[in-house]
Image (cartoon, rainbow, N blue to C red; front, side):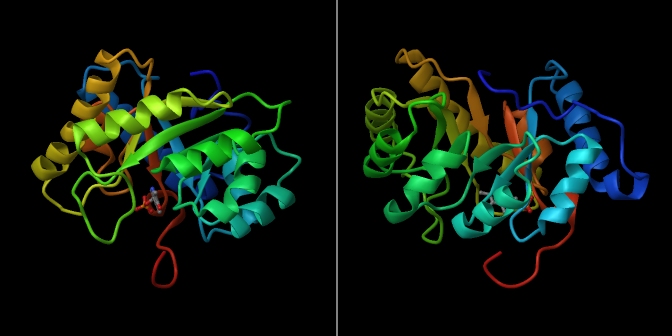
Amino acid sequence: MTEGTSATHRVQPAADTECAGLRAVWERLACALAEAGRASDGAHLVAVSKTVPSARLREMFACGQRTFGESYVQEALAKQEALADLPIEWHFIGPLQSNKTRPVAERFAWVHSVDRLRIAERLSAQRPADLPPLNVCLQVNIDREATKSGIAPDPEEVSDLAHAVAQLPRLALRGLMAIPAPTDDPLRQRDSFRRVRALFEQLQSEGLALDTLSMGMSDDLEAAVLEGATLVRVGRAIFGARPGPGH
Ligand SMILES: *Cc1c(COP(=O)(O)O)cnc(C)c1O
């Protein structure tokens, strides 16, 4: 990883109860890595903080969490402003419209949700020269759900987009992101993640130097880690249920 995504930089902890949800997720991640026979630092936690007030992020930072994921541009910018004194690594994980790319190119270290070339081209053109290349993942709509964004999981389509994005000068293509169709069945969870990994390995075999599989959330992070996830994106298991529809 060119940028730190370490979930285990434990500074002097805040009060135990404030850190409990976060610690439980670190623990789940560590157990899943051990069960998978993978290195204990083989996957990192992105704390998904959409709808969560910045004061809570500050607490989670004090608990030792450094990497936060946001889905809504305006909301994220307000929190970045409020937390500008903290060296947080910000990941953008939500659907991205082309008229909102500039602030994302300027203020985030990662974008997980690139699903078309036009968005990638804008992010590359708008990435400030004094920042390192923007790390990006291509989002794959792995279960072909009408309600989800992402490129269709067709090997040729994914390959064409990946090779085009890899050419862009101010982006660093790191891998794939996916959100499978929700299911409680661990075998079906693993099946979706396995298909994401197959696409990822196909791209690697085509010569792309990729190192990131962004997959796994509150309800399926174990299945994702067993199938090779290197970034898990977890919200509710850390912060509790989110309010309102669409969140
Ligand atoms: C909200 C969200 C998550 C976190 O989901 P939880 O179920 O709260 O863990 C992960 N990834 C993306 C893209 C999201 O929008």
